[in-house]
Amino acid sequence: MAITRLVHVFMPAAIVMAFVYAPAAEVLGETSRLLYFHVPLAWVSVMAFAVSGIASVAFLAGSKGRFPAAETTFHNSATLGTFSALLATATGSVWAKLMWGSYWNWDPRETSIVILLLIYFAYFSLRSALAGKASRGRLSAAYLVIAMTVMPFFVFVIPRVFRSLHPDPVINPGMKILLEPEMKLALIVSAAAFSLLYFHLLRITNRVSKIQAAMEDLSDE
Amino acid sequence: MIEAILANIAKDFRIEFRRRFAVNVALSFAAITTLAVSLTAGGARLETRTHALLFWIIIFFSAMNGLSHVFTREEEEGTALFLRTTSPELAVFTAKLVFNMAVMAVIAAAVVPLYVFFLNVEIASPGRFALVACAGSAAIASSTTALGAIVARAGGRGSLFTIISFPVVLPPLWVSIKATQASIAGGGAAQSIVFLLAFSGALVAVSYMLFGHIWIEE
Image 1: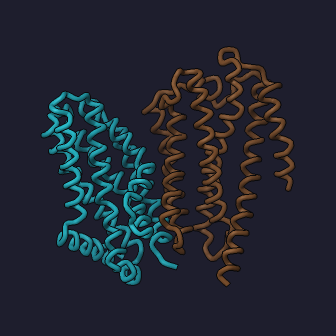
Image 2: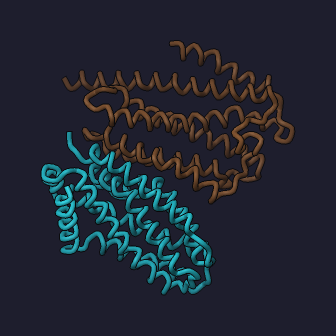
Image 3: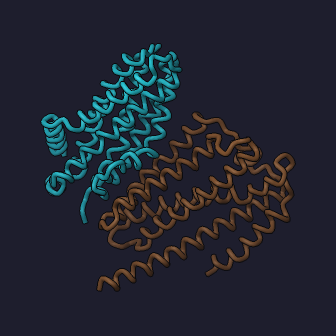
């Protein structure tokens, strides 16, 4: 319940701060307001993948019903992660067109999000191929764990294959956000709002999955 | 355990030697794609980067045609259940991994001369080129063996193996392409080879931990 209330407070605040409170960036102009939606969406897509991976490990490690919600959690988290990755790609592409002149440039972060989407699509293809099988949960969880193992290798490889176009002041090797204080605050509030929205939606989708499973059990009886 | 591993390896190789399905399909695919590239290139001189890209695309898709077969065969012929009851899961996985490594070695051993012959590639560092081909092939085999087991459990449907393997195989594929390009031009490839071996090690370790969940029926 607390998450729902926090979403009701943070989400409107994030939208107002993005359009009213935060100033437009000097070079980027009004287009810089996309930052307050694009970065949190990309963050949520990665967080959703991490949650999916951790829930998959919990599901596989805790057999005999130790973590009963783990299967629905990793699946619903992957669904939410796919949507946020798609939205992050769309908002990023619009910004890329405005700033760099083309929708797609194979920048390391664009490449990372494509790989994340490829993993998600592969996961859903596998999941649909396993429809009706008792091993569906275990096999799809195993795939997510393998995909999660590969992720750190991408961090090593991608910067060596593709040159970055992303602005250094926002994302840099020092891991410091070098923005004006108002912009930094708006970005933090927006990231918190989108994170809370993700957990809120995850809770709702988990409850829907639980109800669906109960209804299927009833119809079987 | 070692006896069970050796027995499984002998069984897999004996069956494959009798039918030669996985190797034949993979080699035929490799030969056809190499010839297709050579014919469509029409004798044009390609850049080292293009050569490296084409070489690894041929290896990747040839591998996709042969690597999942070792598990799908067990499911299709109904021997998987028998194998589950008679062999420990680690012995089964080790045997399948060794078999897939051998299939990749055969694919690489066939594609390298075919590619060099038909596309007139002049390799400045043949030794490094061979090492990269071996390390890259080992990385592909070690990262896709457990995925082959997953696909077999899913009914071995069509191109599912390629779809789920591609994101997992991308890091070694990128590194192999870069290292192959460097070896064709005469540059160093030691760091890339270390990366490929580390990747193989990590994926094999995770696959061993997960294989019980993939293989055993509840």
